[in-house]
Every structure is written in C-alpha cells, then in structure tokens.
Image (cartoon, rainbow, N blue to C red):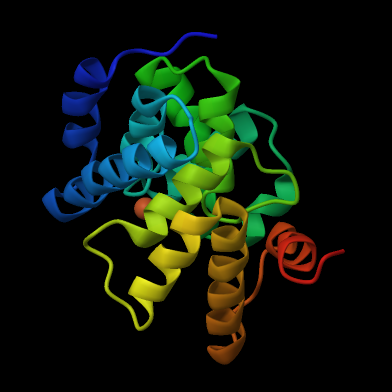
Length: 189
Ligand SMILES: [Fe+2]
Ligand SMILES: [Fe+2]
C-alpha cells in the first residue's frame, strides 16, 4: 500500500488548514514519533499519520455531505457533523487529494475522532498523539502522557473515559462507535 513522503504531504496539508490547526497537526506528528519509538512502530509512518489526521477538518458541510453520497458512505452519517465527518469522511479526501492508498493510514484518520473496538498500533498512536501533543493542556495532561508512555492501550482507555465523560457532562450525543469503543477499552466488554 502506497503513501507519499512527509515532505510531499507537508505543504499540501499546510495549504488546507489554518495556521493554528496546521501547527496542531505538525505537533501531533511529532508526538506520534515519540509514541512510535516507545512501541517499536515505524516512526516515519506514524509522523505522516499525525500530519494528515485533520486534513479535512476545515471542509464545508456541503463538501462532506456531497462526499457521503459520492462514496456511498452510511447515510446515517448525515445526522452528525464535522466533528465526526472530518475523520470518517475526511479519509476519503486524504485518499483522493493527497494520494494516500494505504488502508492502515486511512483507518487511522477514520478512527481518530471516534475510536473503535479494534484499533491497530497506528490507530492508537494517532488517536493518542492528537490528544497529547505538546500544545494540549487540559487538567491531568501530564498524567495522561505518563499513562500512555507506559501503555498505549491504557492511554486509549484514559482518553475514552475523559472524552465520554465530557460528552455526557455537556449533554452532547455520543457516536455509537465511541460507545462500543468505551465498553471495550474501559468496560472490558
Ligand atoms: Fe480531528
Ligand atoms: Fe486533531
């Protein structure tokens, strides 16, 4: 499965994002290198996963809705919004516009917004790097980084616990896949 090099992708991702978000994805790539090193994963590929994970985050609602039809994705997706679309649907833009044919990279984009029951090492690295990159500063960031350095799986559980709690506290909807992921990673089901 093919994917372009970091140096090819960098200016293309930069052109698609605001300065602030671009800096976030670059830092996510850097954090992904750190987690890849700790988990004996391909550091270059992890950095690319971090760089491209939010490639589609600034696309319009109309763009996402058209893409759901064009690619025959689950029509139920239309009930959600760009917080969900930029992962699941965003992978399609990364595939077509950035030339990412590697299914593992595409899945890491798809899963970074929702998590999933089954997650590869790359999925976990991108999911955790998005959350822990050095620009992130929520309460207990240091604890979450420490937990994740010790165990990527424990990190995934930590973030799911944190995210689901936040969604519930704010009375926001929870994407079904995230509930299944929570039951699996936190609840052991
Ligand atoms: Fe994202
Ligand atoms: Fe992100």
